[in-house]
Image 1 (cartoon, rainbow, N blue to C red):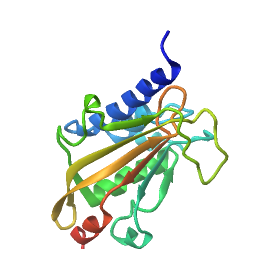
Image 2 (image 1 turned 135 degrees about the vertical axis):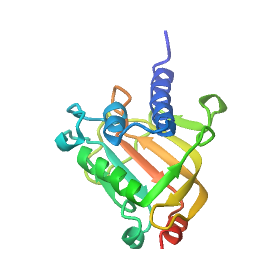
Image 3 (image 1 turned 90 degrees about the vertical axis):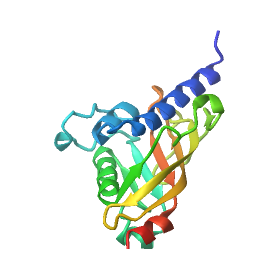
Image 4 (image 1 turned 30 degrees about the vertical axis):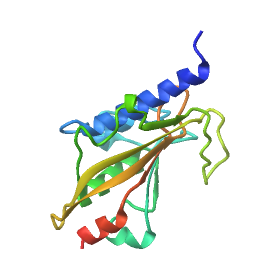
Length: 190
């Protein structure tokens, strides 16, 4: 019999790694497909993003790219938690109107290298509601890529951290958090 913790760890690792690999596809899947495949949702996400409605799942999908609030004038996707399907789609829209991501096969470490850190029992507290016992687990990974300002064409290399947490019982992501280099992005976008 398999250890339930290691089975859960494998499930979370597979979800996080597969999401990261999907970002490397050329072109990557549309945001609505990424949300449908990898993120929690009480309702299936329709194929046409114009038909999407925010669901009333008690734990809707969330995306947070951490950074200073003052930088939002140039980097509108920073310092805000995008909650629900529509807001998560808005995150991808704001990001793509501001930055181009140039990711390659070496952007993320391989699973075999141990570069993904998994804690199947982690509880990442939510600011807006009580803890949900079923939304456990966290996976962290450090990536590297080249980014480019859509407005100026200036580019830079950086490392960033992704933390996926609040996984549901099926192993879908509840919250994707990003820590990157907002100061380089700020300068490149001026």
